[in-house]
Amino acid sequence: MKQYLALCQRIVDDGVWIENERTGKRCLTVINADLTYDVANNQFPLITTRKSFWKAAIAELLGYLRGYDNAAQFRAIGCNTWNANANDNQAWLNNPHRKGEDDMGRVYGVQGRRWQKPDGTPIDQLKKIVDDLTKGIDDRGEILTFYNPGEFDMGCLRPCMHTHTFSLLGDTLYLTSYQRSCDVPLGLNFNQVQVFTLLALIAQITGHKAGQAYHKIINAHIYEDQLELMRDVQLKREPFASPQLKINPKIKSLDDLETWVTLDDFEVIGYEHHDAIQYPFSV
Ligand SMILES: Nc1nc(=O)c2c([nH]1)NC[C@@H]1CN(c3ccc(C(=O)N[C@@H](CCC(=O)O)C(=O)O)cc3)CN21
Ligand SMILES: O=c1ccn([C@H]2C[C@H](O)[C@@H](COP(=O)(O)O)O2)c(=O)[nH]1
Image (cartoon, rainbow, N blue to C red):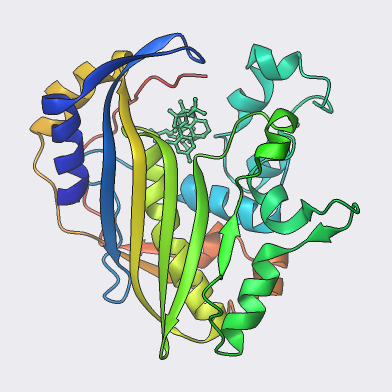
């Protein structure tokens, strides 16, 4: 939690105002942030200086791992975060690739599970990683990437947290996640939960201990209409100790994640937090 607040304070103190053409808003911006999460000791990096809707963040991750491409699929598992990007973004509404209401196109999980080869057949990046790690193999290329420049025009948004690299040292699994663009008040609250949970889940289903998760962010920003709430409300609050994440130990395979897992299989223990803050969301 301290590293999150330090990043917010750094943006407030040293950020540079940058015009963002896509949203038509200005963002107070810094470049480069490195966050580390202690998955080994279950220090769940949940924001405590406001109420975090962590279940929606885990649902979003589950949707990516399942290869979802439609906001209705996300809603059905308890996540509303893609409604606006799928249905309220004029550029996407005008895009001939959009298949109708709620379609997100070839984003995130579609690339992770069904990356299209030139001959039209799909590559399942996640399955390859899970199969390798289960056998104790780290070929130094256990990379899940959603970043496919050749298909950016076929999706509603380029992926923000775009690449996850898994590394095995003995029986301990590590994760390094890369994020090109980060809405620190809203998105990072979710992304921290997702990086932590992704390592915990993949360690569990491949039979390894979880080590540390490293989260590398390039462009970290606060939108102009979020700044006052961050600077004058959230940053004035004292954080509480980190809670713990409990994952149902019956989850043992990728197939389990794809079929029966729900948000009831995740529990947060000891979450003390301040009141909710509603930050404006930019489409
Ligand atoms: N401008 C922007 N910021 C983002 O963080 C973002 C995007 N766009 N587009 C794609 C996804 C969608 N994400 C989102 C979208 C909405 C919330 C949000 O509204 N969160 C609320 C509560 C959500 C709930 O009740 O479930 C929050 O207070 O954290 C968070 C992440 C992250 N991404
Ligand atoms: O997981 C996510 C997804 C998105 N975001 C934020 C970062 C930016 O504010 C927008 C995306 O806009 P671009 O113009 O495509 O950079 O969404 C996030 O923080 N986390």
